[in-house]
Length: 291
Image (tube, rainbow, N blue to C red; front, side, top):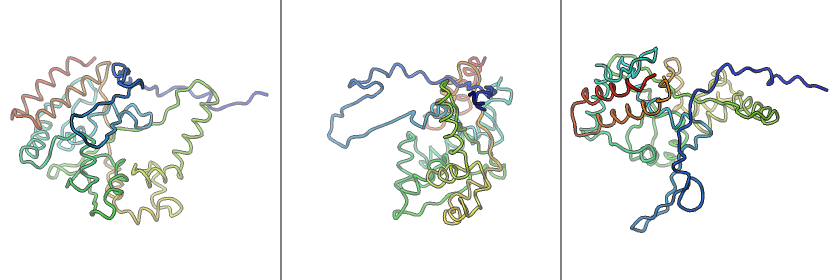
């Protein structure tokens, strides 16, 4: 008997156009385990484990390095690349003004140049006053604040009376297996994860916003939980303003992002006060990398 499987009729209308970062140079490791590196300090201290690229099987975590900066620049009326993705624009007056604001915060000692792990630890331990990041970490911050300090949430800050334009880097579920049985199992899992019950668990336990907004006020799902957790409300309010992250085109996309973000970091925390000059030189460099 032949069973008509709907999955076999699905066409790949939305191909995955992202290339995974090449990390083969780290494969050797230091202790016989591929990609595991162990380092010994000169002084005694605690054992520390650092992990990366483990956000599920999501490649975007290693690629969408600029998603938050895109939202900052857009909120000041600028952009990092034009809508056609043919012209880099992160040295425009609006972008320069946005980065100059960040530099003012850094030079006055309000912000520090820390890696993401240190930022998250500082906020979770109550040693950081404000942290602008994805709502996906809210669950971690709530657990850190419990019985230690009062954690509050607010919408993304605005530049005066200009409209705030937050964006999301995007998370997706995709099936790559060619094995029909694995495809079926993955499809069933995807249906559960994106169901009302699945989104209830994801939002309640992690902090990701539910894409099925009908469950927000439904007492069978998130209704009562949302009432007891007001920290989620600013995130829900921003859904109406949310814009998609713009990926860089072509095979040099990763180099473009890294070059741009390095320039913005230098312009924010470096010794040179010429923000416009730093961004302009980087913009000219990345423009040559576009297809």
